Structures are given as C-alpha cells and as structure tokens.
Image 1: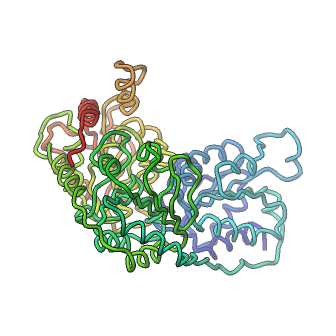
Image 2: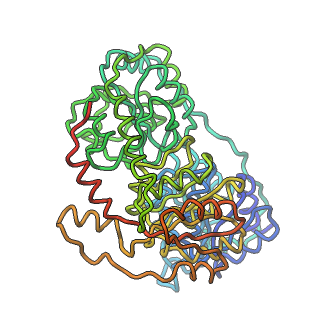
Length: 543
C-alpha cells in the first residue's frame, strides 16, 4: 500500500472521526486516501478555522481533534489554533503536507522548516522521513496529545514519502493510567485542611480533563469548603451547589477575590497557571497552598506549594476527604448570596442597546442546561465568565490560556459535530465574529445548526475598557460593521436583529429550536464595563 494509505489507517486506528482542513498540492495522496476511509473530512474555508474546530472537538471529547493543511502558508495558518489548543491543554494533532525531501535542504518554493516552527507551540513535533516510521510517529503524536497535561502535537508529511510503498500496520492503542497519589502526601494535605480556619478551593481545567467533577462536588460538600472555578473550569461544580462561589479571574476586587483575601489555606485542584496567574489571587505569597493535580506544580514565586498531591485527581480527592475534618467556618458563604444578587440585578431591563447582564440572563434562560456555549475573547468573555451559570462541565467553553479571538464560530461547528443532539451557541463580539465569519459557509454546508449570538458595539470593547481604566480615553478601537442580518442571509443562514430588549428571549428560543444556522445581531451597552470596574474597585469585602 501507499504510505498515505497506511497513514490514514493509523488515524482510523486512533478512533479519528473527523479531519478538519483544506486540500492542497502537497497533501494530494493523503486526500485521495481519505476517500476510501471511514473518517469524515470537513472542508473548511481557512486553516485557522480547521484548527479551532479540532481544538474544541478535543476539549469536549477528550480525544485528539485532527486538522490538516498543505505546506507553507497553509501550515502557518494553522498555528494560532494549534497554539490555542496547546496552551489551553486541549488534545489536538495537526498534520501538514510538505515538499519533497529532495528540496528541503535549500531555498525552495513555499518550503519552511515546519517541524521546527511547530516545535515551540506543541508538545511533540516530528517529520516523516521514511514510510517505516509512520506507525510510531502517529501513535506517539496521539499518545502525547492525549496524555496529561493534554496538548497539541504536529506531523510533517513530505509529498514524496506519501507516495512510497510500505507493508505495515498500525500499532496497538494503549492508554496510560494516572498514578495513585502517595499516602504521605494525602495525610499531609488532610492535616492542613483539618487545621484551616477559612479554606477555599480553586478548581481548574484539570478537573474537566480528568472528569473529576463529581468527586470535587463530594469533597467540597463533605468538608464544607467553598469552591471558586477558573474561567476554563466553569461547571465543574454546579452553580446550585451550596459551596459554589462562581468564577475567579476577573482581575479585579470581585466577590471571589474577597474569598481569596480571607483564606488561610488555598486548595488548588487541577489548576493550570495559564488560567489565572497566581500573583492576581495570591499577591501576599503568605498563604498555605495545597496542589492537587496529575502533574507536579509549575515553579512560580506566587505559587509556592506547601503540599503537592500528584496522581489521579479523583482518587486524591476521595482519599483526602476520608481523613480530613470538615471546616466549621461560615464566613465565605455570604459571598455566594451577594454574587447571585448581582447576577439578578438587570434581568427585567428592556433597554436597547442591551446590558451585558440582561443578555446573559436571557441566554441562560433560553438554553438547555446541557447546551454548549462557545465563548469568544473580548469584553463579553468577562461577563460570560462571571455571570453565565453552569450546572455541568463543558457547557461554557472559554479560551483563557492562549485566549485567541476568532474561536467561537469554528469552535461551535466542532462542538456540534461532537454532540449533534445538544444546543450549541457561539457567543462572540462583532470583532471576533468577523475574524472567522467565512466558516458560516462551512456550517451551512454541513447542516450543523448553530446559533451565533453577536454582541455588537462597533469596537474592540475589551481594549476600550482597559484603555479607559488606564488613560481615561480610547485609542483606535472603533470600526464599522456590515449589515449582519444580510450577511447571514448571503451565507444561507437566518439573520435576526434585536430591536427591543424584550425581543432577545423569543429570538433565542426560535433560533435554538430551528434546524438552521442562525446569527443574532444584539446591540450591547458596554458602558456597564466601567460601572463594574468602578464598583469592584470600591468594594470592601463584605464578610
């Protein structure tokens, strides 16, 4: 068989369901081999969209999403999405065609050293220089991508290697099991928790990856310790849970920050430093920190660990819970009620442009609890992170490690392909929406009914927010938008515009139950940004 055919058999052996990408001259043999495969190829309109689709597919399923490009500009167009997956610890395997090995040693048309370029943004980067190594390289790429901490890997496939003949078969797939936590570390952590006066839990994305949310909820309830989650861990503890404090990471004196200020012991569970830098929640460097994760803690001056419990997160939580004494303090529980009061403040507001709080209230009310919101990056991300209530993990995906704009629309397509029976909403600003708007054609062609909720303010709203806070004036953040309703219709999608504040709920309900791609143009009043900043800046911790 051809090496390209063996390569595709290796992907099938890994359980690959979709490959997102674009055909090109240097991946002709791979594209031809896909025609005889069970793998579905999703032709996209830009390679960045392919990488974001694979990124979100990997986050939601725990199986590596796969994206494919040709050499040169095709490969470099993948890089933002690949870097996003790697820094956000989503499993992804990126593949790029390459020129013949006979011209890699010299200056040549569209040739770049892709193996080296991708090395800095992946866990593993390799070039196929012989058909004999295909089975090993593919198996390693998937194993590394899907081993904690998850991330991206890259394979460069020269066109002349793809044409060669080979008699081989894929290697068996074996998944490593996480190690058991050491008993002495369990006892040490339990002793610190038992002696704590005001402990708090910071739950991170590792809880999602390890599927340890049930054990986290039991741990918090049994030991009566409040839980704050990072943006990327929304839903790991249901918002209705009595110990849930909401999201940490607004980088301001929020209610959750008050909880960290009062804590004497901070229990970090599955926490990655890229999610919320410790200097923001531990500026004093004097609190006792317990690190519970599948990997040792990163070295950081503000994250000085007293006890590290490394191993299977589920088992670590259950074993500590059995030997630690419950917390008897009640001071932090008032924070939860204050946050709920804040969330409910504008639920009946009918003004247009709409207040961010009202948009989120309507979205949360209209969506099923197990529906999936894919949040882009911008001012709306700060509001969604703080106020969108989640009862289940992986129901509000927020890129906050690499934090790349443009992820929402292609990410929503990846989410809908992964879970076709669940509602999927791309929550995006007007700027992020137009960065990958071309993938609307992909969604319509694939008949993936997603809803795109565009928060429209004709500006880079988050940057304006920061400019106003820092300098009291804005600088080059304004732009004009096309008619988003007509734009949607030109792609064959449905377009809606919110004219009255009371209309959003009914529009959302209609769009969510239509079997169509829908875009909702929703004017937003971002003057609320500065009001929130002012409020948080003046807040005195109310406990």
